[in-house]
Amino acid sequence: VQLVESGGGLVQPGGSLRLSCAASGSILHINAMGWYRQAPGKQRDLVATITTRGTTNYADSVKGRFTISRDNAKNTVYLQMNSLKPEDTAVYYCTANLREGWNTPLSTYWGQGTQVTVSS
Image (cartoon, rainbow, N blue to C red):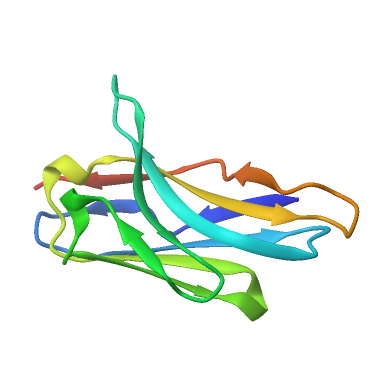
């Protein structure tokens, strides 16, 4: 199973970016998917999660600015980030809690991370 992120980059304060993360490989079913971020010298923190049915959860710091969504048919999760601030600068990681087969346990997989830099 692989999770591949894309869409990171450099953006000015107030700008927008859209991150994508596609899961591929032997996948029977994906439960929750989400995004975390890690700034230099800091711990990895939750940004947002979304269940199979679309129930979402956000960190207080991004509520009203970020929107998480997913396409179950494509095993893909998105993060639309608007009104970006310098403090949003971090490496963003996607995660998926999934089952590879009928007799395998639920496991959590991580992407390799994509850099988001908010700076003028």
